[in-house]
Image 1 (cartoon, rainbow, N blue to C red):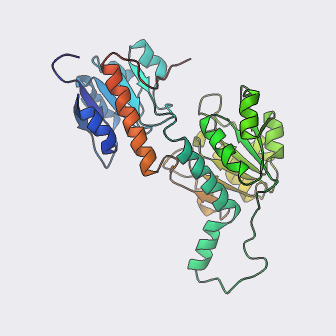
Image 2: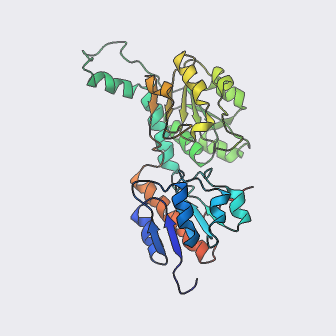
Length: 324
């Protein structure tokens, strides 16, 4: 590093735990606590910065990176990075980093919170009580699903998928999973997992949890065809990325009773939500709360900041993203 401090642009205010690390060795500019910069604002600011700390909501393409000759690192404050053109960054010599591991437990917890809320009809029940409709205990009021002996299907058994499976053991569920690559036997045994193909998983799951990373391959992976193969008593939980599920097809499946319900933390065109979902009582909708715990956001901030500092010092970052 030269005697002049490197400059870091942070597109939205992140926890102080991360900002203080950056301030120790860099000149830090936080764009705003309220809103993300527009593309034009970013393009105007970026040329004078050495590092950029971005949110998942900031699209960073080749053209934008090309305007910033000093830029050495883009640190994404997220585990996903589909907002950044990784190949272009590599060609321009810009390191891209993310925050994996920091949000594993928080995301697994929100998957279970959605799973339990939709299958035990908590949100419907809450609305029922608030509307003054409850007249007392009744044998058939808002009946839900028990978990013991039921099958939980996990699509994508990475860190978060495994953490969800670990929690399922406490509920005596059978857990099946589908991955592009099968896990080793020791991991399967540790988490009580059985490997099945995608068709078997979709047909046999009572609850299906989506945990694959988003890519061109996983876009609309759960389309009308796959949703039609699910049991009519089954529930879909998505805490990965909205566009992995074909939202219009999901609305149709939920509307026609082809599917019992869904718990969604992510949507195809966030923050827009398909109007059909808003009308359905058998869906629980959360505003992308996967990593929303105080502890997780602090860990993410520290990791995102340390990644920047390490790259600027010429050291390898904790979590480098590559295009292959």
